[in-house]
Image (tube, rainbow, N blue to C red; front, top):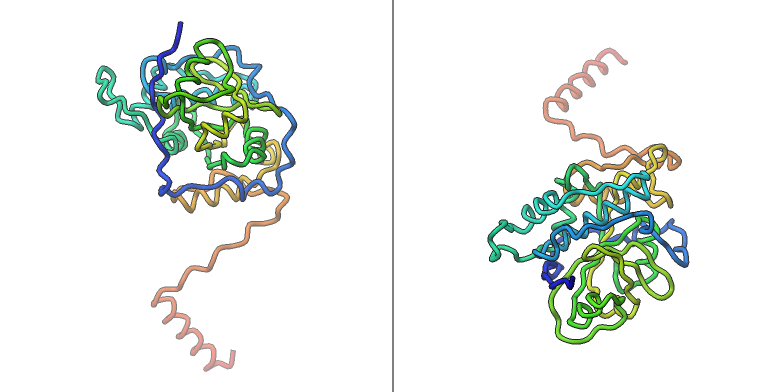
Length: 289
C-alpha cells in the first residue's frame, strides 16, 4: 500500500548549542569499505509514520532496534504508544488534533532521548555529524552503529519509494522534511530505514537531500569493562563536553589506560578559613615552629 508523505522533520535551529562529533574521532580507525548494521533486525515497524508526522521519534526507535541488536544481541522494539508519547512530548502533538501535528526539530528529539528516553531506553550522549563529509559519515556509522538523518523529500523520492525503488535521484517539488536512520553503507550509497523498511540511498541523493546528521551513544554500545565504544572513541571527552553543555554529570568513566583524571582547581577558602590560617601562622611563629 503506498505511503502518503507526512512531513515531520522541522528545519534545524542552527543557533542552538550542540556538540560536534569530529573532535572526538581523532583516534578512530579509517572506516571499513562497507558496513551492515541492519541485516540481523527481522522487522522494522512503521511506528505510525504513515498517519502522523512522527518520523523523528520513529527514526530514534529504529536506531534503538539496530544498536540493541548489534550491541547486546537482543533486539529492543518499542511500541507505537511509546513513539507517540515521545513525539507528543517534544512537539506538542495531541492525538485527534491534526492541527497540532507540526513535526519536531531533530536535535530536540535527541535531547529528549538523552534526558527522558523512550520506553526506559536512554541515549547517554549525542553529537552532530558533518553531512557534507562522507568520510566522517562513514566513520560515524561504522563507529556508533547508526546515524540519524535529516533530509528533504521530493516528489520523485516519494514516488520511487512507493514503487519499491531505491533513492537514486531527486527531482520534483519538495514535499517537506523527513528523518531516517542510516544503518549501513558501501561505495555506492547508504542503507537507511524509513517507513518500516530498509532502502538504498545513493551518495548523490545524500549530497542533495541531506542537511543534518547525528549520532547517539547508547548503553548497548559500550564495553562494560573498558567503558569505551568498540572502536575506542574518546567517550569520556565527549561526556565532559556534554556535561559542560547541559550541566549534567558525565555518563562515562575515563579510559583506564589514560592515567588518573587531573584534579580540578582547589576550592577558594572563605573568610573564616583565612582568619584561622592567619591565627595559626602567628601562633606557630611565637613558638619558633
